[in-house]
Length: 229
Ligand code: NI
Ligand code: MN
Image 1 (tube, rainbow, N blue to C red):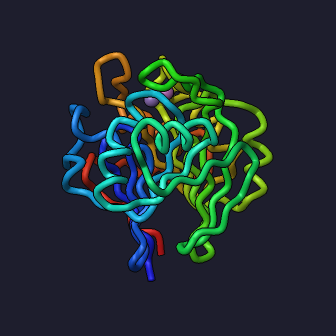
Image 2 (cartoon, rainbow, N blue to C red):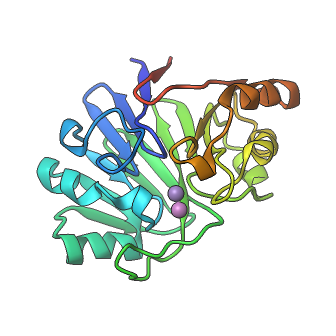
């Protein structure tokens, strides 16, 4: 059964596999590039990478409507539970793994900040390795390039989803260095073209990936999906 990876604009991704729907960092209602609204999506699991508004905005609404399990760093899981009455949360932390009905995840380091929208402390920013049916997908989430990505390169990553917007995260050139550290077979760009300060030329980025690595770049438009067989 194939795994479907759909870009919902900005840093929001939906993974579907059979009956499982896993949503990452839902930012839909206020995103200028989201192809759907929060009302249009449902999810069994919502993974949250850090506390910034462009990653947490629609988490509570979707979780409370769909009874989703919210998985985040401990402080953010607590915040959703206490401030937004989210019933099902799992708090974890960097380096921890978790088995879930669809497979497993591992929370990875991200070099970024993580204050929540009401100025609550959001712990540290994270990324995720998502393992489903023998495939490994790495969501770097909001991060700078860091050399310990070399350690993740030993994890047999099939697909890396990397930010290329620059300014708040790594930019296109650093993402090519990341692909090499990660040894990923395929790479998809994220966290770009939402607003002018993070606009990037995805076609030029793809050429840079082809010239500078062995990974296959895959550029989606918001709303498009990539099938992982
Ligand atoms: Ni951020
Ligand atoms: Mn962000």
